[in-house]
Each structure stands twice: as C-alpha cells, then as structure tokens.
Amino acid sequence: MPRRRENPAYRFDTGVNPLFLAHLSCGLVSTRPGTGYHGLVSFPAESEPAAPTDDPHRFSPRYTRCALGLLLVVYVFNFIDRSILSILLEPIKKEFELSDTALGLLSGPAFAIFYTFVGLPIARWSDRGNRTGIIALAIFVWSAMTAVTGLASNFFWLLLARIGVGVGEAGCSPPAHSLLSDYFPPSRRATVLGIYSLGIPIGSGIGFLAGGWIEEFFDWRTAFLVVGTPGILLALLVKLTLREPPRGRFDAPVSASAPDLSLPQVLRLMNGLKSFRHMAMAAALHAFYGYGAGAFIATFFRRSHEMNAGEIGSWLAAIGITAGAAGTFLGGVLGDRLSVRDLRWYMWVPAIATAAFIPFAFLLYLSPNPYVGLVAYLPGSVLGGMYLGPTFAMTQTLVPARMRATASAILLFTINIIGLGLGPQGVGILSDLLEPALGIESLRYALLSTIVVFAGGSILHYGLAARTLREDLVRRDALD
Image (cartoon, rainbow, N blue to C red; front, top):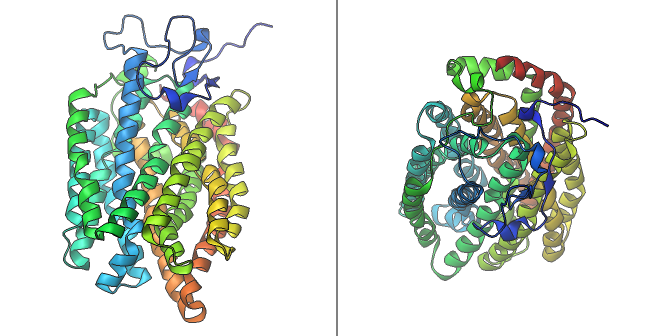
C-alpha cells in the first residue's frame, strides 16, 4: 500500500533504542549512512527530515549527540542548585526559627517569581541573540548565587540569594529547548527533550545526595558552597564548545525568515491555541503537586520517620537517578512512538501516567513504615516524570522556529508561577493550618491532599488539550 504523503515537519514516527543510556557519551555508536541509527534513537533512514545538504552549518551526528549531552549536564547542574535546598530545610528552619510557611516562601515564590518574569525577556533575547552565550552567562549567575546562599546571615539574605538563583536559572531552558529543536529534526523532538529533561531527576537526586551527606558531616552552609562553585567552570566549557545552529534548520525557509513578532503578539498567538492553554494548565497543576512534594519530601521523612539527612538523601538520590530518569525518558519515547497512530497521544501519555501515580501517593504518605513508602516512591517517580517530554515537544511543534524560545518561556512561566511559585508555599501553609490538629503529622496529610487534588486537575486539562490539538497544528501550518 503506498504511504500517505506527509509534511516532514510533522512526521513523528520513531523507534527507540532501549540502550540509549549507554550511548549518551560521544562516539559509541555507528552513524553510517543507511543504518537509520543515531545512537539515542533509531529511525528509518528514508523518513528522517534533514537539513539541506548544502547547509554550511550542518552538524555531524556525533556533534549533536555531544551537544545534547552537554546541555543535559547543564540541566543537571541547574537542578542540583535548585533542589539542594529541599534536603537542607530542616537545619535552616532550626537555625533561623522559621515556620513551614516561611520555608514554603523560600522554596517557592522567592525563586519562582523572578525565575518566571525574568524568563520572558531572556527568551525574547534568545530568539534574536546568541543562545549558547546566554546559557553560559546563566550558568555563571545561578552557580555564584548558590554558593553565596551558604554565606547568608539571616532569612532576608537567604531569600535574596534564592532570588539570584532564580534569575540565573531563567536563562537555561528556553534557549536550550530552542537549540535542541535546531540540532534535531521534529521526528526526534519529544525523545530529545525527554533526554534533556533527565536533568530534573538526576540533578534533584544528586542535590539530595550531596546536600544530605555534606550537611551530615559539615553543615548546610558548606553544602551550598560545595555544589555552587563547579558550575562556574561549566559556564566556561559551554561558552567554548557549544556552537550556535541557524534557526529553523528543519523548517520551511519562509518559517525561518519571516518577520519577527513582538512578545505581546506571541502571547496572543499562544493564547489562541486551545490545546496549548489546556496543556500549559495541565503541566502547571502537575508541577504544583510535584514541586510542592519535592520541596518537602525530605523534610517529611526526617520529621515523620526520624531518618537522618544522609540516609534519606541517599534514598531519594537513588530513586531520582534511576526511576525518575527512566520515567522522564519513557514519556518522550512513548509520545513519539504512539503519535504515529494519533498525535493526541502526546496528551494522553501524561494523563494516563498521572492517573496511575495517585495510588502510589497514598501508599507513600500513609505507610507507617518509611521503607514501604520509599518503595512506593519508586514507581511513583517513573510515572511522575512522564509528562515532561511530550509537553515540551508539543510546545515546540505548535509554533514556528522564530517563536520557539519564547513559546518555551511562556510554558515555563505558566508551570513555574503556578507550580513552583505556589506549590511549596501551598503545602507549607496547609501544613501550618493542620498542625494544631495533627501535630507533627500535619505535613504528611498536607502533601497527600495536594497531590490528589492537583493530579486530578492535571488529568482533566490534558484530556481537554487532546480535543483541539489537531486543529491547532493546522493553524500552525498557516503561520509558516
């Protein structure tokens, strides 16, 4: 039967090599013409959208794998510096005599408000300027501010340092998403962005591990100094080795050369896409309970189960680096594979994974045995990360090349102002409200209630996004 003619910009058929993790380093796999194999993912050679053969900026498969690996390392450092605070909240609470509400402010709004609002102008800069230079500068800023956090003499200076980390980290993902969309064709986009998003569980895991044991043997201030300083060297490496690809390498020429749009115009365009509105809200509600739980899960085990920082840090690191990473990758892979049948699988995969996560949350937070709870956290971590790859990939696909960094920033703005900005704060406030009745167990029920309510909302909005996804992709075609 003859194959249906497709627009190559929207060809999502893909197969995935299950040994991808062994091939993340450069040069470990064959890239001979005709093999259809590119190390991370295998594709039919004839269906791979390609940059023009006369493109003077064409990159070898080896280089694009190296670039993806380096950006993954950047995102790992991003989340080490972001998440290390979670394992250190309890000693900070004791030293500065803080409430859970204050800890929620430190974990959420102090970071998220500046991260999200600064992210939009940085994204517009990324759509016009040098994306690799912006990423290098961002790494330097957030790493320096992480180290400075360890010097804070009171809560006010601690708050200012976290604001500085948020400002720096705002310059990471929007230009990185845009770069990866120009390094790799659309058929690999969800998988590639899923691999990039492995930085979230891996970085969070390393942050828990390093923070827990450094605090165990030294103190919380030393932990911030130790994890912040190496990022300055990473900024230099990025500046010297990461090359800037031309925008829209895999898009129609008119897409890459069309007139630039202002931020208000891009905002109006994105708001006009019903699927994007629901997808962004679904991801934001997912992030609300994800960031809320992530900020307080170490504190929960230390407070309710009396585990020490090193032990709980090791457990959370092992789970994040294995199960969390596997789920983040798996979400992108399943999105790419199943979308061959129906593009709406990009929305259905996160919805199904979120629904399957809820029973494990009950076991995690209600079990009287901490190790039973940690075992339940293992499949929960797999399912919890599966929304990232499909959501980020569809955001990039819904807009032309000239808007991609800004579209990513709009998505991250929504996710982080609602999820990161309000999630930890909401859990902290609810815990303080429940404390008179439940005492030390107030945090347990604050976490569980938040997960059940906001996971339900996320499932609903992913389902609504699927209903209009096809027509919004047709609208995107009209913009080229």
